[in-house]
Image: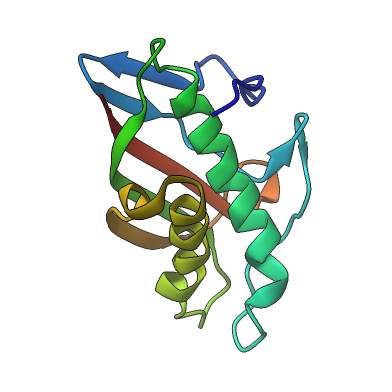
Length: 141
């Protein structure tokens, strides 16, 4: 896969770190070129489709950070863990359906290696009022 620029950190951290063959990404929001493409809490009782682009952008940012930790000739052999944090308003209960957008995106890019153990959590807020934040842990080989 082509090497792209890392997502722009919004604080004092790095986009990803590596220990051995494990790659850990920072939490990534739906920023493109440092600017959120979507803001606001995920609404209960409304269709999820409008949030797909934001979820996929956050997943892409995490994947890009992970890919940039690979050494020449390596690939991501498995996404081991996918954490999806949802800036959900009270009453929202479809966290896992929203997280499916991220899993689908990772599978489009990585095939079966994109399916991971996963948690989807509702939170009171996220940086910049982002609707979603995603963190992944990957194995490289």
